[in-house]
Image (cartoon, rainbow, N blue to C red; front, side):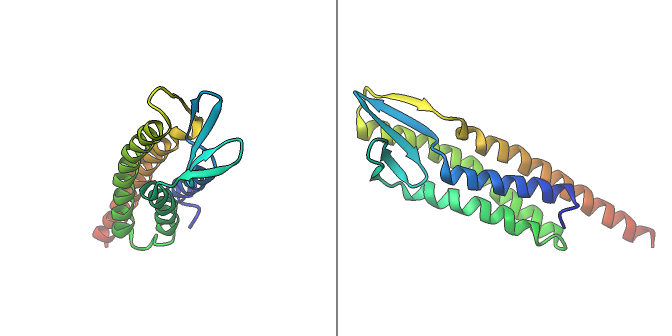
Length: 153
C-alpha cells in the first residue's frame, strides 16, 4: 500500500534507519589516532579494528527499521499500526539517549581529553521521529475517515 502517504513516511524511516547501520555517528580524535563510532562498535580508522561493541545501540539501530518496515504491511489494522509507530517513536527517543551515552562512554574509554566530532547521521533519529509523527497523524486521519464513512451507512 505505497500509495498512502504514511506508507511513504514509513518507507523513508526504514531507509534512513538502514543508512544509520553503515555510516559513523561520530569520530573521536586522540593524539594522532581517529576512532569512528559506528553501529558495529568503536573502530580505529587506520586499521578498521573494532575496539568495543555497544550492544544496546546495535539492537536499537537494527530494531527500528524492522518495526517501521513491517508497519507498512499492516495497513488494514490501522490501530495496531498506530501503536507500533508510537512504540517506534518511544524507541527513537530512547535511541538518542543511548547515542549520547555511547559517545560519552567511547570518549572516556579512549581518553578524557579527546575531541568528539559529530557526523551528519546523528540527526537521522530526529528526522525519523518527525516522519513517524507525521505517519501517525496520517493513519489517524485514515481511521477517522473510515469511521465517518461507516456512520453514514
